[in-house]
Structure formats: C-alpha cells, structure tokens
Image 1 (cartoon, rainbow, N blue to C red):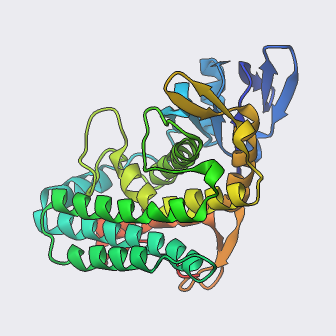
Image 2 (image 1 turned 180 degrees about the vertical axis):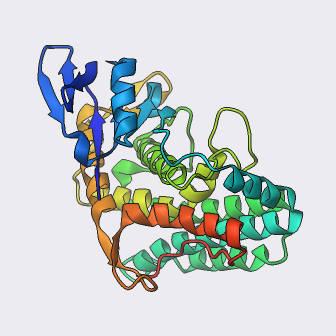
Length: 330
C-alpha cells in the first residue's frame, strides 16, 4: 500500500524533476518519492504551484490541507477515477428513496455502535467494569430497527456515543481527565487527541471515497450540507473506534504521549508538533496493519478497509447487492 506523508514545517513544496521537493522555511531540503505516495497532508504553512498540482494529478496523489486547530480545511484530489455520472445518479436516487436511505443510515449506525462496543468489551475483559456501558450500547442497537426517521437515527448514534465516552473516563488516567466530548476548539488533551485523530480518519475516508468515483457530498446518515464531505462523515464514524480511540488509549496508557505534548491557548488545547508527530507515526503504523479478510481470503491493511467500504457502498448502489456496514471481526 502506498504511504501518506505529513508535512508540519513551513516552507514550499514543488516538483523537482520526477520527484517532490520540500524546502522548509529554514532552508532544509527533503524529497518525497511520488511513486509510493498515497496522499500528502499539509499541516504547516506551505506554498505550492500549479506545476506541482499537475504532477501530483498525473500520479494520482491527493493533498489534504489542515488549518488552525488542526482542523481539516480541504483536499486537492487527482482527477483520475473520480468521475462517474451513473454512480452519482444512483447515489442521488438512493438519497431520494426514503426506504433505501433509511436502510443505509441504519447500517452506518449499527456498524458504528458495534465497533464502539468492541472497544468497550476489550477493556471490560481486563481490569475495568464497563458492563453498564455495554448494556447502554445494546439498548441503542435494539432501537435502530424501530427507527424510521433519519434524525432519530442520529439521536440513537449520539446516545450510544455519549455512553461510549464513559469508557474514556474509566480507562484513561486521572492526568487525562475526560468530562465529555467537546470540540471547536477542544478544551483539554483528550478532546484534542480525539479531534486530531478523527480529522485524520475523515481525510483518509475522503481519499477512499474519491478513489471509487462516489461523490463525497451525497450521504445517507449525515445530512448533505455546504462545505463538507458528508459521506466521509458517514464512513468515518465506522472507523473512529478502530483507528482513533484504540490508538488514543494505547498512547496515553503507555505514556507515549504526556501532558507535555500539548499547548494551551485561550480556551483551547492542541497537540504541539512533537505530540502530533508521535500520534501520526503510530496512526500511520495502524493504517499499515493487516488483517485476514473473511471473504477476500487474503490479508488487507486497515487503510484498504476504508476503500473496501466505499467500494461496497458503490456496489450496492449500482447492483442492488445488500450493504452491510463495516463491523470489526477480529
């Protein structure tokens, strides 16, 4: 699988013959091999030009831009493979069909709760007593089948997630106290880690969706809106417990990230550069992990699971094959 490259420095990236060159603000030069790049993530203040964009487009490399507060600001996607009129038509038809949209939205919620429950069950089997959280998640799952309205499904997912976050309070040490999910901006280290991790999951889902020619703005659980890729929100919810939350627990409990890895600003708490580097190194290693796929009969990376999910949705839309959202099986 190709790699993601993260650039934190300020400076400039440009095409240099047949590769990508980064020149930082202090004059240091680095090269990124374009042949093995899946996407480039820009976290610093970076200048680039159309020559570089054309070069990246020719090689199918996406660029994801992050702004203040580590928030996702947008993507520059390669043209190749991202247009299919028939796919868009079928996406819209499914959105406009109340029964089909409800079925897809319910499947996203069912998968999201299942993957949260997998994390809770893991820690419940260790030294933590999380039976109450598991019961609340099971209650939420039972409500999905009786819920026909999309806003009610959103409510079921939100109720489940609030119960799930009690796991964070139990599992994390007192130095990383968590009193509930807050963002924009995150007020403490745990919320900062969740926000940063979820933004990485979201951006990776954008890449996966665009690789399949699905339109990332047409979604089924989250309402399509202005200035966001709502289908990426649908799919990212499935993978946040697997990619963000388990990593967060591990980094904090193994003391790979400490309070020194954050910076406090007025009303907000953010990872500093060292903290982001530590998190992203482990995040990318998580994406590269492989698992035996039960139907493909081969090992696939966690990152490829994102693309498989988008392909599965596309196949459902084009062929009518039933869609069963990703549920962690290992």
